[in-house]
Length: 293
Image (cartoon, rainbow, N blue to C red; front, side, top):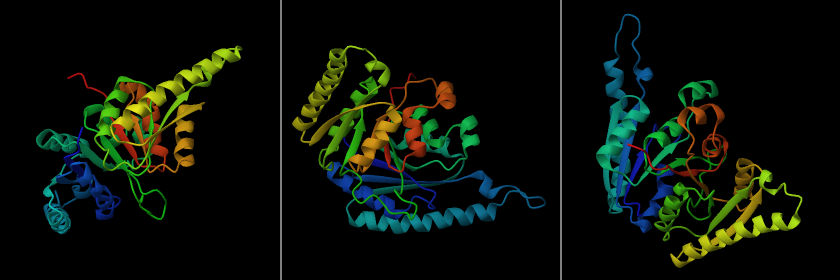
């Protein structure tokens, strides 16, 4: 799958042109069109006693966004890219889905959710809701340190954590479309400790060797597509081990398939992908599973 059109969702505060600039290497992976979306949350233009709806504030915020987008677009035009922009007063996720339906992007870029934990518990994070409602891959962009240092080469050393799901097959095809921008990819599978409780050491080694062979076969498949890949087997809690591997191999991002859990169960129990998106310092590329529509 090639990334020809990118939807860049920004509120400006945490996701600005410097972040977009790190994604422009995707031009080597067929990128030709960037769509900007700025959603002004309604509470920023809330009705106040005696004044009603603040139309003037809406106009000012839209015009500010327009000025920023024009400046960004001029830079992209010089690179030969097509550009589009949307500025709306609305709720974030419905507006993203509306633009996705109209523009059919190949990748959505969004910042991490800033909702509080209690609000996420009842309403879900923006990213979790988006994953449930679209099949378009989602890149959750993060500045990797508190002082807003950007990941230098976002696609240089990704870490792909696979659990051999159907969604992971889709993820592999997506990765192949990035062959011209990926430097080296690390592929890992985490064996849960419960699978290794057999007192028979031979059985434990057999499980480890089986998983290693599956990873090596996947690496060979990616090597044939022109991507340098390295396999790794870890044992333990998947979330902790994925984070550990990302640090050990200095990953530039973590690639994950979405959870197959029902939405309400995921909201209360959590999922590996959701927890890593919410808590990890690493940017995350999420590949949602197929939706039953």
